[in-house]
Image (cartoon, rainbow over the protein chains, first blue to last red):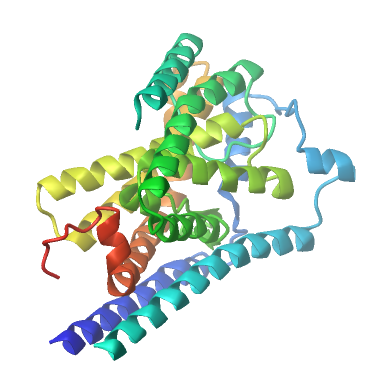
Length: 109
Length: 251
């Protein structure tokens, strides 16, 4: 009973993960040659359209001011990876502890 | 919350209301310098009571029970991961998810406000993504409006006895979509269109965000369900101790 429920859960998780992968990758094939820029940028294009003139932001990001320009694309992806890494690290560490704890509990029983 | 803490939150709320007497409006990751100064301040002040409430909520829960820390850390890390992943969408542009639904359901929506602002600060300072001047507006949409809606949806689903996984999916997904709706309205308030005013402008901004965000919201819903399955399998004592799963419930 216990094991059947467990395998049932793993099947659900695997199916769901596959679904996520398909959902995330499908647009690349559906929209061949699209630019895939950020939708935040699309927002600022829209601002120009609504106001009818190019909008000059009145404040530039501090880091860009200090660097005297935009953050290089490669460095930006580095920092994004750092963000992902911190998150994944915490989740993996905690999950690892929890999984091991459950094992120990079952052994003791 | 203790009496003093309640008072503090109430005072903050009153302050915010007196400051923020303006139509309730809300948007996501508005770029640095893209909101007029008045809006920046108003949104920022509006966030303060939520952040105060969140701070107390976290402190009280942790004092009551240290185990909740694991769940809190997980929820925070989940937001970190999810909001750093830029995913292509059917419209041909990329966007990222919010990840705030998980913490709102497991913990409390106000606690997520505190977690959310950490992520927003990280992105605003290091990535020039979002911004410090628009931090208030972005916090309101991503870390307050979204999670509170997720929480409400989940409570309604509980009342209606909807299957737990379906409820989690709906709560996380709708919270994500709502975040972008709020962003659109925030932008619309700052940039009402000449012909149709705020409403017409909101529809335009929504037209940009919504089609991109919908598929991503579905992904966020699914990922949230997956992580809750993981927690249910391995962290049952913690989930019980924070009251997410009732002690008697047969699983």
